[in-house]
Amino acid sequence: MELNDALRRMARNYPGGLTVLAERMKKPHSTLDKEIRGAAGFKLGLQDAQEAMEFCHDVGAPGALELLQLQAARVGQMLVPLPSVERGQITLESLAKVMHECADLVGVVTKARADGVLCDNELRDCYAAWACVLAAGHVLMEDLKSQNADTTARWGKGGVR
Image 1 (cartoon, rainbow, N blue to C red):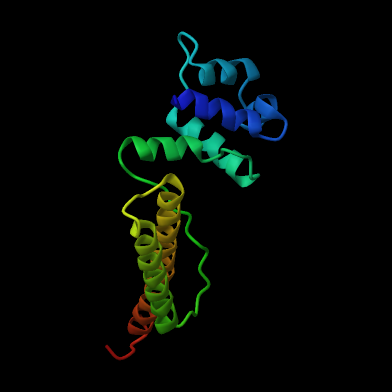
Image 2 (image 1 turned 180 degrees about the vertical axis):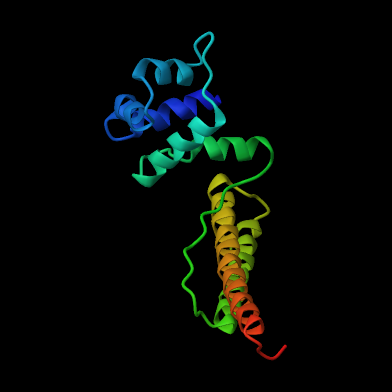
């Protein structure tokens, strides 16, 4: 799949399609169309592609992150949706969640490998379980970062080190 295909799908899925997306981006429809199609002499800039993706993502347009996922895959990476984090979580609860998700991952991988064959659905399940581990780890690290900010603020106010 080409990058421009992902851009076209993303723009087409924006409510009102390419015409409305172009208006939102303050670009003439014909220019954005040519940039997305890759017409001779036209290229969509990185900032414009980012803006289009954010607009599509903000309204929940299907395929809004397809371009980003494709770019990540081309360099051997993947995107993992991270949960929003509320301040004031208890670190031990966050850590327990990471351990729980790790245990789930072990179970999913063990089950998938039990017959010595790994099918597409099993691989998908393994990726999903791995994403849950990463998401739980994100919550833990955001909790620790928040606690560190609180500590640093206290030190700045003459608190105990």
